[in-house]
Image (tube, rainbow, N blue to C red; front, side, top):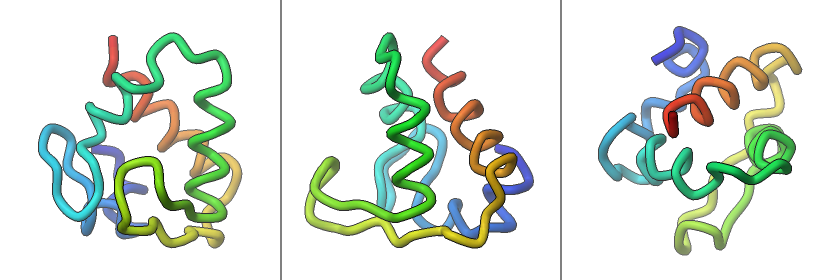
Length: 82
């Protein structure tokens, strides 16, 4: 898990291999594997928040992260599908 995931609170709701409040990061990676637009979608959800994709619990926006920090998180998550 990248340090930025801990620092920004992602680990409060997400684990790598099990569902917590939010989906497991591996499940996110599997869902978006092969999707050419996945990185942009995940970046937008991290920045602006989202709801309805994984159930009724909304994901809060994490707007304080930089573009580079969001990219690090997205690359990590998508890399779990390999």
